Length: 380
Image (cartoon, rainbow, N blue to C red; front, side, top):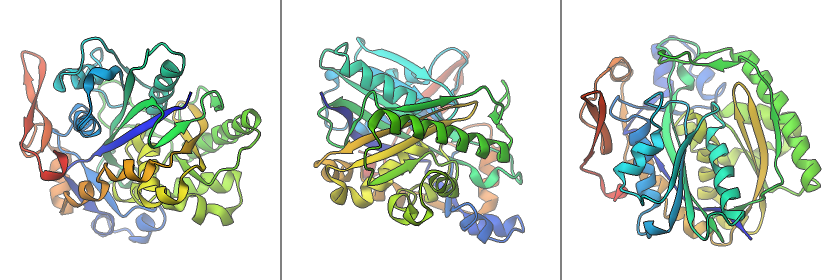
């Protein structure tokens, strides 16, 4: 049985800041951001564009024109939830009025949470427990660091929703062929009640590379080292993918095997759980027609830490399927803002009332409230 990603959709904040302009405002050589990090633009989420709103908008897009009665599972991978108890998935389930007979939950392990959801969904379907039903996996996060901090240029926000089915139109996951690696480390964390994450940057890179070495070796052992046409890596910043690739394979293969997956990530920034899948979407948007029936590698890393290297076979129908995501239109619908406007939004604590699609509008009787605002043409 082939199981994997049948459809994919993304949701982004409506605003972004140019990285060269941000560098100039901080008195930093722009090359440190554009070349050193590989960043061109950075998504800026206002309070109304929270994790729930981004996830709901992405799910609505991925389900457009589909029969929702076939759904049996909804998983949201996130490390920026909105409640200590009630999962983001529960909000999304209600906002979209999905079937009552679904399994609904969140998965959390820093940036690995989305992959935990993908594997749970694929194995649920492959085991037969799904009884022919499909699953939705959403990666939704807001990477936030303080203004003027070292982590500031590695921010971002967005959601990636994937429909997981039998006979998938985009890519079939090689179930059971993963290599995994985990360790109890403190490379990145966010204490309860704190909006911004704490990170030991150099140590986190070291942990990432050590985990990659073990996970890649495990994948090779289980699969016999299947030939890979491309590899997508977890992308906290684009140059990390280059470091990762050169850690396990010849540097000369980077431009062919990895670079095509980074164009979309460079225009959005770090979206934690969704970064790997944003890279996958960007790769397929650019090259799906050339990758039909070829195998690609995927590496997911979550600080703390856990990781997984796995592979997937690209479907001959991938080009048609990824075109339905309208990624170019989603990017084009955004508005470039000044650094001053970006700073005003970051400091805002209440919704600004301008987000489109599903948006958080405030709390009432200690319950979070969301509304559906007027949407632009590409989101319908």
